[in-house]
Length: 115
Image 1 (cartoon, rainbow, N blue to C red):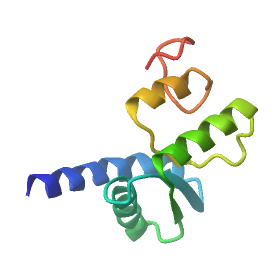
Image 2 (spheres, helix red, strand yellow):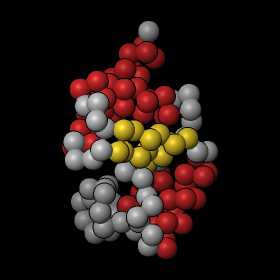
Image 3 (cartoon, rainbow, N blue to C red):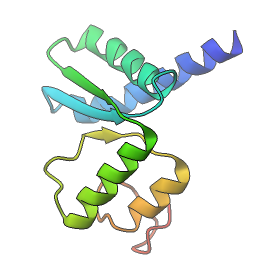
Image 4 (spheres, one colour):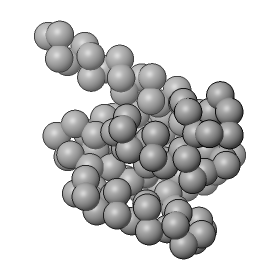
């Protein structure tokens, strides 16, 4: 029961965070890993959002955790941002590394990349 409630709350929170971006887009691409949790939660959030916004298409791509990290770091290091997803799920420790090379996408309290 607690696990189901937690998943439902997380899906709702993620779904609400999609509103600002998805309201402007016809298609939202998401990179996720762990089909039993991350992918499932993203699908739940997309399903909930799509009920009231049927014109928005969600492309949830399931990669291994290592693939997500490698693709993300390679694209950021090379400056190729056009192929990045709209949403990418990463672990906290990885977000810290990523934020240090971004000047967009993650709110930081200063230019040193601290969250």
